[in-house]
Image 1 (cartoon, rainbow, N blue to C red):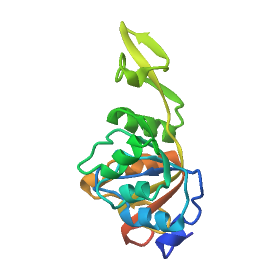
Image 2 (image 1 turned 120 degrees about the vertical axis):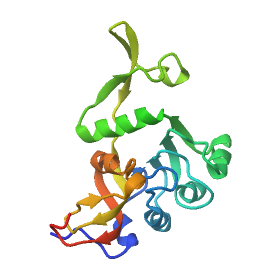
Image 3 (image 1 turned 90 degrees about the vertical axis):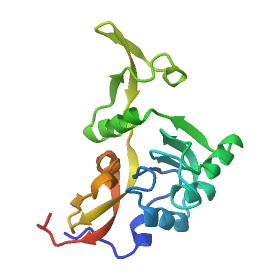
Image 4 (image 1 turned 60 degrees about the vertical axis):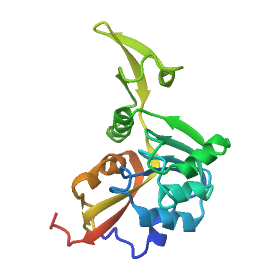
Length: 200
């Protein structure tokens, strides 16, 4: 079995309008920039994107947002170093934001991959982020119920891959990538190197 494809265009060809897409990376580290730009070229719109931030400058996720392809962004850090693109569209009411604390975001994605539909966390209790969510008390402390996050597709970046889809990551570039690979129905990995099956 060989799961590799020869072009980024072929890799993202199955992503259609209205899809939910997880995009790995922490800032620029571990972000699958080439896959994101292939997705822009492919043209799907009304996407829900799950990412740690809202993109920087005019490349990668910021470019996808700038092209008007993202209807909703689920992230923990929309105010990055250069968030101009997202900020302008958000203030104009052209993109929806679901703000999630970073640890909660990671756990919601992990829960999606592990098949855990909900969990409780003290993070966000008593704030606007907890409004409308179930609350329960455990050992005298209040916790907010958070739901899993799953996606139709995950676009991730890895250092080394093999034809079966096994992956390794380079240092901090690992970040959200393996969690998102678990939580998506289909994972598309951009790799720096492909080795033979059995090398990983």
